[in-house]
Length: 273
Image 1 (cartoon, helix red, strand yellow):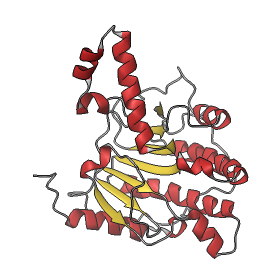
Image 2 (cartoon, rainbow, N blue to C red; image 1 turned 45 degrees about the vertical axis):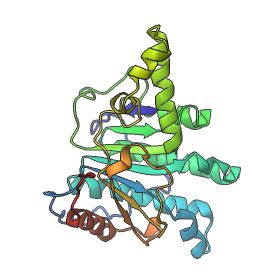
Image 3 (cartoon, rainbow, N blue to C red; image 1 turned 90 degrees about the horizontal axis):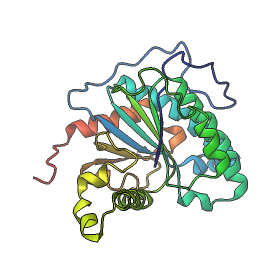
Image 4 (cartoon, one colour; image 1 turned 135 degrees about the vertical axis):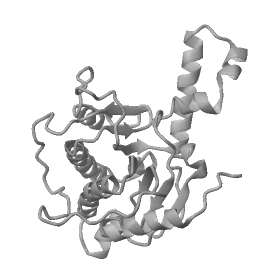
């Protein structure tokens, strides 16, 4: 499932954020972007290490999430400046809902503020989430960013840069949800099991994924030294290049991002051929 909206710069009143701000000072010069000749069109990042970062500094876990949110805002700028067309950021997995309620309550507030701040940057944005996974209160707050039926002018046209925020997302759940949607369509057409079998293909499943219409991720980055994907963009990442970074997410820098792009550019992609 994907909640989609587009935001044009200046299309809504400024949103006030508390404790979630870009770490880049307003007067900081724009860094030179690396060559995009062989750069990735779609970059996905698994933001890992907020809690470990906070604990290593003797801080509350929520402070790690706030510090990580500030880096998200910077990462959006880095990706846009580097010529990336789509940036997918995994903020919250379906597995994360098993965390303590007190932590989740604070995290939901931080994510809501962060989503508003990303929307204020003016790029079209999608919320990637499993069907029915988000608590009602959080889902309503995210949907309030762009009420249904009130799309900004030009929101339907192709955008040079788009942001996906994966919130309450799981790769297996996304595939199951896509098949459910495909089955529901076939039932609505009055089809039978034979027609359903014929309807299932890589293409038809792809059109029901939350990233439908976007290119597959070329590069997936995971921070904190963990070397696994945990199901992020499970269907879409079959040919993705993987880069694992030792930095905890709140310590992730432009240099780390650029190093991942340089590593991507150095690889020969054969797509199984």
